[in-house]
Length: 178
Image 1 (cartoon, rainbow, N blue to C red):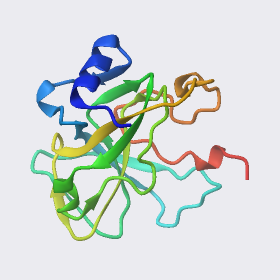
Image 2: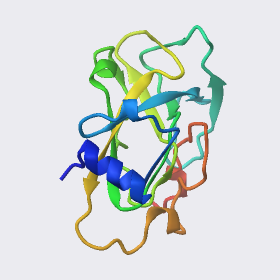
Image 3: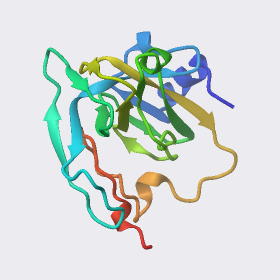
Image 4: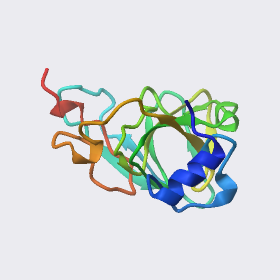
């Protein structure tokens, strides 16, 4: 089940969902709109290696916006810091974002119960498109969890994306054993 607007508000009141900054006008019927933060990043190397720590270069989106180019993976970040302590958060692109040819995640749209951070976006585009810091970029949807959670994400010793950040975070695949 997906939480309705009223249930999202109840969970915010209870403190099981935290969104900062929060503005009631961004609450939809069953989702909450999130916005593109001011930082983007690209990988330094053109060829990425899953076993290697692939480093990124951060840059700030200028006031006049930044033109994304096809064929490049951009890492972005949400303005909103979120905590979800009793539900599974899913981040999806807004339809207006998709209609500009922008994908905001390659595969990582699901968060874990206990995820506490900004969301790193895996941005790609179908054609050149100018984006701006603060533009609506996606929406969070919250699903009910069936059963007790044994270990919340923010309590896992091996969680790779627990450090609070306002900048996009590169892949930590290299930390896995394979």
